[in-house]
Figure (cartoon, rainbow, N blue to C red):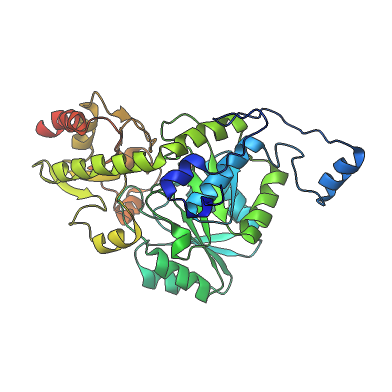
Length: 394
Ligand SMILES: *Cc1c(COP(=O)(O)O)cnc(C)c1O
C-alpha cells in the first residue's frame, strides 16, 4: 500500500485509514470499548507517560474513530485530523485550543446560527471578543483586523445566500497579521473545495451534513497541522471530552466511501434545479454559485470543483408567498437540516434567521420571500414538479 499518497480522492475516500486486524475483515469493525489493556505494568506506564504511542482510553483515541480521522485528513490534504461529537464541538474545541483571554476573533457575518451564539454568548464570557464583516468584502476584513486578532473564521459559500469568501486572499491577509484562517467547509466537503491547499490553516466540518450524507448521526472534525490540531485542539478534546463515538465514526466512514459520487450528483441536481427556477416566472432571483448570474462566478470556478447542493431563491409576495410554496410541497422535507439524500426546504426569515431583528435580517439580505433548498439525490424532475405546484399558484 505504498502508493497511498498518490491515490486520487475518490480512492482515498474508500481505501485510506483501514488497517486490517488479524481477523482480516474487509469492512472496518466498530470498536465499542472504552479502555484498552496493556501487556505489563511497564507498558501501562509507558503509554501513560507518552513514551509509547497507543490506545489508553476512548475519550483520547479509538481505532474506529482513527480510521475516519486518517481518511478525512487525507481528503482535506491535512497532516492531522481530530474527530468530535458534533460540528459545534469542533468549533468550540478549535477556539478553546487556539485562543485565550484577550484574543479577538474576526468572522464572516453570515455564519451558522449556533456558531454566532457560541462566539457572542459563551466565548465572550472567557474574554474572547468576536466581530463580524461581510464575507465577500476584503477591504472590510482588512480594516477590522486588530493587534489582538488571533483567528479569521469563514464559511464559504454562505448560508443561505451563497456568497463566497476568497480563501486565497483571506489566507494571505491572515498570515500578514500572524492570524490563523479557519474555514468551515461543511457546505462543500473536500470533494468540492480544499481550503488547506489554498492557504487556510484549519478546516472544520460538521460531519452531520454531507460527510454522513443521509442525516443519521451527529459528528464533527478539525483538520490541520500537527501543532495546532494534533497538539492544541486534540489536547482540549481529550481533556474536555467532546469526542466522536465509534458507532458514529463507522457510519461516517461508510458515508465517505460515496462522498465523491454524491457531491457530483448533488451538484448536478442543484444546477438543473437552479436553472429551472431562474426561468420560472414566479421566481425573482436565484442564489447559486453555478449560475452565470452569480456575482462571484469566476471565484466559484476557481476555488470550487463543482457548485454544490445548496441553493436559495426569492419569490415576490414576502412570507405569505414563500410559505405557500413551502406548504404546497409533498416530497421535499420541511426542515432546516441539510446535506442529505433527501431534499429539504426552509424559510430562513422565520426559522434559522428568525431570532434576528428585522433590521439585522435586512442587513444580511435575508428577505421574507427567500426560500432555501438543500438539493438531495431524488430525481430532479420530481423536485421540479413538487416546487411547481406552489410556484404556479402564486
Ligand atoms: C450544521 C452546521 C454546523 C454545526 O454542526 P453540528 O453537527 O450540528 O453541531 C456548523 N457549521 C455549519 C456550516 C453547519 O451547517
